Amino acid sequence: MRPNFGRFFYGRAMADQDEYGLNIRERKFVELYIASGKAGKSWIDAGYSPNGADQCASRAISKAKVRKAIDSLRPDHSAKHQRVTPEMVIAGLHAEASGGETSSARTAAWTQLGRALGMFVDRVESKNTSLASELDALEARLDDEAPKMKIVVNQ
Image (tube, rainbow, N blue to C red; front, side, top):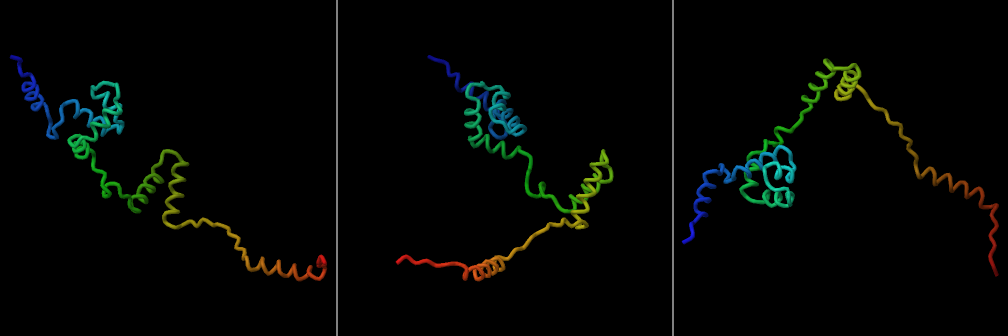
C-alpha cells in the first residue's frame, strides 16, 4: 500500500497560509508586487523560477485570493487622500517661497504664488481680422478692375 503524502502536505500547507489563504511565497510575491508594481520581478524575488516569470505572475494576480490580498494590502488611494486643495497649493508655495534652498527657487515660488492669487495677468496679443471686411475689399477691387477687363466670346 502506498503512503498518502498528499494529506500530510495539505495539512502542513493549511497551517502555513495567511488570512487570505496565501502561502509564504505567495504572500511575499503580493507584498513585493504592491511595493514595486512589477509582477515578473516580484515573482522571481519571491523565490519562484525565472522561467516564464511574467506569465506565471500574471496568472497568479488573476487568482481571486491573490487579487483580494493585493486589494486589501495596497495603501488606500481614495480621492480623499489624493485631493489637492487650493489652500494646500498656496501653503506649499508660501513655505517654498519663505524657506527655499536657492534664491531662484524662492523667486519662482513667489511668482507662482502671485499668479495663484491673481496678482499677475499674462497678456496675450490677438489680432482679430474680419472675413467680411476682407470680402468687401476684394469686391471693391473687382469693381475697379472690371471695366478694364475685356470679355471675349468665341463665335
